[in-house]
Image (cartoon, rainbow over all chains, first blue to last red; front, side):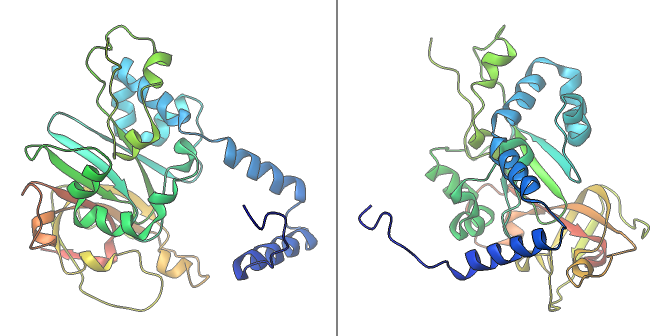
Length: 199
Length: 95
């Protein structure tokens, strides 16, 4: 970067953030330490959490049943707290492919997937995923057969969604850890599907 | 909490209304008819919360399933493709 280290004035929103933060601390509603901890926790959440949920569902049919019935409760069984939110897990089958979007803003299961990727928040993805999901998925390299129903989930209110992808063939007998490594963030948003490495 | 008026499988129509303020019902689905997939529970009304009020009594929230070819007349995908959206009860009427 050419202008690295040069002074740049704060943008409108950066200035607003600093002002609000300093006021909250000054008024004793929050401490710097609490803020630091929250930011650390936010960045520590990664899609590996979601992958753990998926791989457990692949190996444990009763866990899977609970997960599809009540995602929040099932995750709590795994020690993953989902505060104040209801998690809905939607299952891919040979007949149905699910994908997640938030057309109004960028609601995302952060607790299980961490911070959303930039494209998830883009106007392009948010508007086109409901309007022409097959074209969008194809741009991600995922061509869904016309015989398979696509279910797009627009998370407009209090639910958060996670896609439970299909377990790839050829992974019989794999350990949970090995299976989890196949489950990427994009598979749990529904813009990709997990594939077993070629033998 | 407002009692739930619909159950899974019911046909519902989204109001074609355009109030100002913080609305969680996307424009593209207003006026459309779909089927209740499930009742999600009851949640404080976000339109009220946005006005710094308590949003109570809590409003039943549904996941409603719509056929894409009905939402978008020129839809290109499979005729079975659907979009599912969370909609609060006060935005729904029986269809």
